[in-house]
Structure formats: structure tokens, C-alpha cells
Image (cartoon, rainbow, N blue to C red; front, side, top):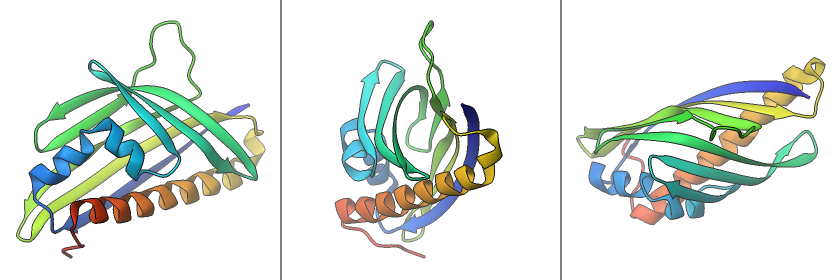
Length: 158
């Protein structure tokens, strides 16, 4: 078992208004519907519990459940920090943010996250595992972006 980490940052300008994008990003059920591999998001006060299933890495599928401390600065920014419940051991966590700013044609959306997971692979496989993680994150991001635009009836503004 080894710990693997990768980061991703993406930006997009979309033709939906900031408040419309904000409503999606703050709706746990809708996020789960729009995001591949994301089975559910459960709101528990200031924490959200994320459950991912069948995440493919090097020919195997993994499930992860992790608790994130959510900090909302409506309607501009959402910060999330891995914050396991006391006495629990989690094998995955994410630290990052969504930032929303007005754009002449809608909203400028920036997303940044660092994902850390414990996987049953030796550290020697780090380059392959990290590449696989980046691939999964890219697919999740692309499909989420497509689904978000479709849900909002919006397009890329850039």
C-alpha cells in the first residue's frame, strides 16, 4: 500500500450567470448526478461526505468515501479540505476550491484540487498510478463540464 497524489486545475468561461453555476456547485445531489464515478454526496452540517465508486486505476476498480470540510463564500468561492471524522481512517481525500467570477458573457469558473489516495500498489508504480489518476480526473472533469453546460443550457463563452 502506498500513497499517491496528483493535482488538477481547470478554468472555463460559461454562458450561465454566477448564481446559476453556484446553485449547481452547492447542490450535493445534483453534483453526484453530473459527475462520473461520484455515487453520492451527503451533506452533514459543514461537512460533505463524498462516495466515489468503480474508479478505474491500472485495471482495477476502487471505491472511496471521504469527508470534506466545506467553506462557502457565496457566490464567489467554495473551499474544501479533507477532514476525516475523529477515529476514522480514510483512504482518499481532496483539498481544493471552486472560484466563480462574473465574465462579460456569464461566469469564469476556476477549479483547483489535489487528490490523495492510498492504493494497494507499490510505490515503484508511482509514475503509472499517477498517470492513471490524472486520466480519471481528466475524464471526470470533461464529463462534469459537459453535463454542467447541458444542465444549465449554457455553452462555453471563451
